[in-house]
Image (cartoon, rainbow, N blue to C red; front, top):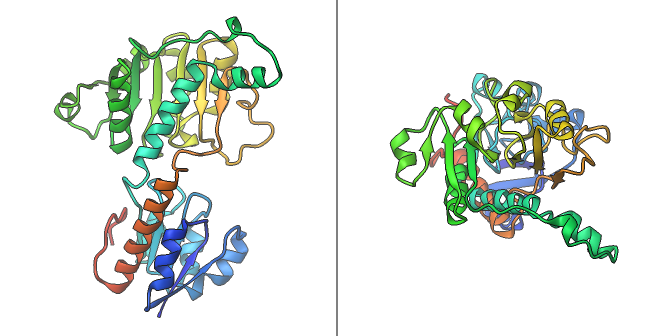
Length: 316
């Protein structure tokens, strides 16, 4: 009998699959401290996580029977991949399962920040009628810069083009002809930064991309650029962005993610009038939650059973 620990919230459809598995038993224990997680890890063959659990080297080493870590989602920056490989543990994710939801959240934030949707709502809820105060700008005719042209970046490009935007993208791992097929110009990062009226991030966190949106990068951007981040908070130097928002170098930002989540009360981006915040809702749709839950459960079970290993992000 395979034992599986689900240490972050998982959609009901995925839990139902675990219930139905005759050769597996699972425990769902969320909100565990690191010490609590270390204490129980030896009991389990599989670990299913979202973004909350930190599957670091200590946790992986404690999993004496651990064979697979399943990340319900695409980002794996909370898994120590080197440690997983060292201990013979397969680490896997679910690319594509929440791509549409994340792309739609990107467009939602882009539109909302452009039309001052949240402050206008709050003003009217306070029984004010300040139409002139909330005049916005259109997406039509603007240039969108996309950093990272994988599944989500391409979905965002399709939607942006439907709004009449010109789309530039940067991704060193994508051939220019692939982007050209969907009417997108693939260019160097500096050109994206220089040309974009709106800049949206859809790349993984790596040593090269950590704090890639920093003071130096911001200085290369158009004055008044709007920055959207529905990927990972670590892509942005939050102090540098806050300063640029306050001095007008960056016109506005719409942020779904933060370096630390939830952000601390003293986070410099909180409560700035030209910042729209949401609490990491990129994948928070009923459809995405169902897809990501069922996909990761099926992948973990198939891996444990020796049937097939899909979407592994490390090599054993």
